Structure formats: C-alpha cells, structure tokens
Length: 303
Image 1: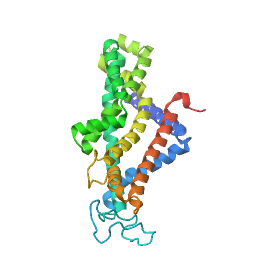
Image 2: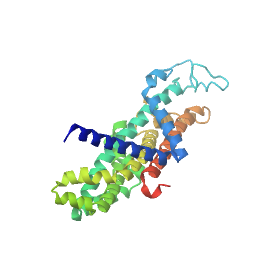
Image 3: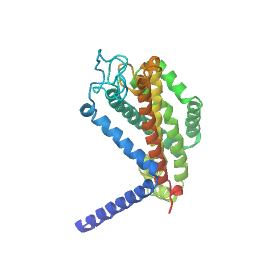
Image 4: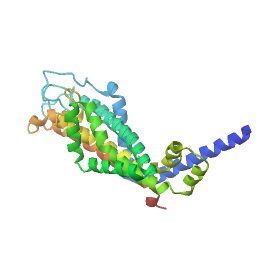
C-alpha cells in the first residue's frame, strides 16, 4: 500500500472519529443536567488530584485547642477552619478534600473489576450458550436474589473490615449486572451477518468474542459503568458507616459519618458536610449517566 493510500485511510478514520465524538456531544449536551453533572464530576476529580496542594491542613492533623469548632460563618468560628472541625480537632474541609480521593478510588477499582469479570463471563454465557449459559445465569440469579448491601456486608464480615475487602465485596455484588447486560447484547449480536461472515472467514472464538462482538455491545455497558460508579461510592460509604469499610482515621466520607453520629445534635456540620459530599457526587454521576444513555442509545436520540 502506498504512503498516500495510508495517509488517506488515516485521515478517513480520524474524520470518522471526530464525527462520532461531535454527534455524541450533540446528544449529550442536550441534557443540561448531564452537562452540569459532568462538570461537577470533573471538579471532584481535580480536587482529588490536587488535594495535597489545596487542602489547608493534613487529613489527620489534630488541633486540641479547636474541638468541634463551628464553620466560619457561625458564632465561634475560626478562619483557620472554614468548615469547622470534628470532635478531635481535625479540619473538616481538609478531610472532605482528601475523602474525595477514597471515594473516586473505590468507584474506579470496583467498576474496573466488576466490568472486566462481568463482561468476560457474560460473553462466555452468551456466545457458548447451552448448559454453560444456564449454569452461569442461575448463579447470577442467586447473587441478585440477596439485597446488595446485605450481601456486601456478609462478604466483608467474612473477609475482615477494611477498605480493600469492601471494594472486593462491592465488585462481587455489582458484577452480575454486567453479566446479564453483556449476555443480552451478545444474544442480539451473535446471529447477525457480520458475525456469520467472521466465522466463515475462520476467525477464532476468542477474537470473535472480544474483537468482533464486544465493541458492538459497549453502549449499555458504558451507561451501566457510570451508574455503578455512584452505587459503589454509596455502598462504600454505607459499609464505612457500619464500621466494615475504611477504618478510622481514614478520611472516607462514610467513616466520617460514622465517627460523627454522637454529635449530630450539637455539631451539625460533622454529619451534614460528609453527607452532602456523598449526595452531590452521586447525584452528579447519575445525571452524567442519564446523559450517556441519551447519547449512546439510538432509540433515545432525538433529531
């Protein structure tokens, strides 16, 4: 192939990618809530990345002369601690900033593990079918029959309380959703002409599954990943609140809530601020997931 032909093919591909991205942004940006959620999520990511630079104090640094200091706009507030301090004199703003790292880390790890395992199992179930499909799906049905938080709690109780074990448990709980979505998409794709043509051409089963079929099944999986991200943050916070996730003095938002329970009536900020951080982050991710669904699902695209 001549260099000119190669350059032409490269330009054609890049033009196609730009057109796809432009179309995606067109439909995504029609949902204003999704755009707001996206910018908020980007802001949280930047806060997490720059925590060491923007946090005014260390996450575990204690100031014994400032126990349960209220936010700066209340009587008794201290300008050193804009959002007040907790029961042992730690700056709430700094702990919230560092806590964003843990929440995003949990979401990334859980979604990556659950998606990788779930998509692989779903591909096998949908492509092979028969007894293998039946066995896999019945196992997924058993996992889904348990309340997700209760199952995660049992798994962490078996493995031992820690943030790592909490992430493993949440990934196990979320993985059946990817299995079912992938299997359903594969069943819809495996009898299409392009798959038949690939089989006739002698494409090996693994390449057929991962390179031919899987790329055409990604749209619902991307939306599910966005929604699973927020669920992972909520479940990690719930496990932390119950004492089965991140352990003190880790500045994880759920653990911060657990430590603040006894002060809820006389120091509202130690409970309200971590709760608001969880609420706004999860809401932003869910709004972003709705926008992804609108942009990636052809049935929902508006002319």
